[in-house]
Length: 73
Image 1 (cartoon, rainbow, N blue to C red):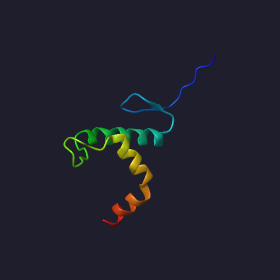
Image 2: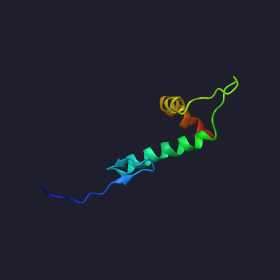
Image 3: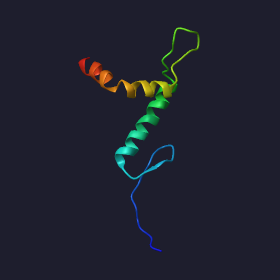
Image 4: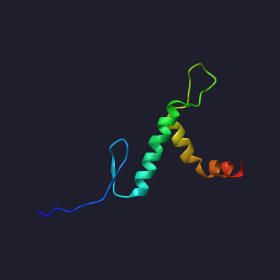
């Protein structure tokens, strides 16, 4: 049995990633989730809001359009 030294990246939720890019993407999503807890998008019905998972799914599905709109601001 051999022992090898490895380099890895650990995010704030304890997940381990071999690639820094993947770790950064995961951490950014965690950070956004934490921010969204205090900045929810509320609907017209009392106490209704868009769940974080639904927001992420919508953003991923509409990524090109959202980035274009933000770019034009």
